[in-house]
Image 1: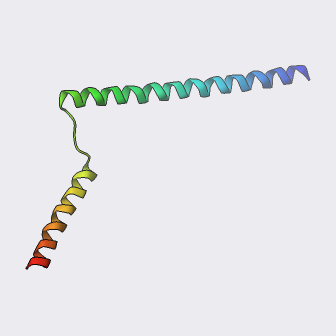
Image 2: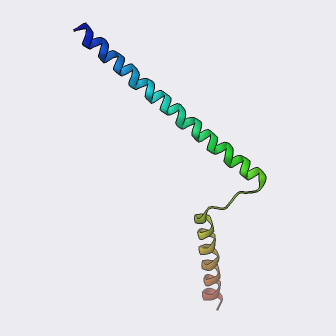
Image 3: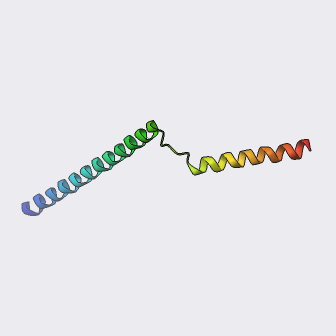
Length: 72
């Protein structure tokens, strides 16, 4: 009975260790992505997301059509 308990205990510790290591790796990868993005932005290599451009286009076209309909 002691053997199975100690084996189960070590299995839980190993599992927790893997999860902790995986979480650290995820955090490290995320931090590296953020650092890379900041460096790109400082160099001027930033891009505007497509959804922002689409919203801007819709607003411009909508305002233009609104002016035509209300003033025309």
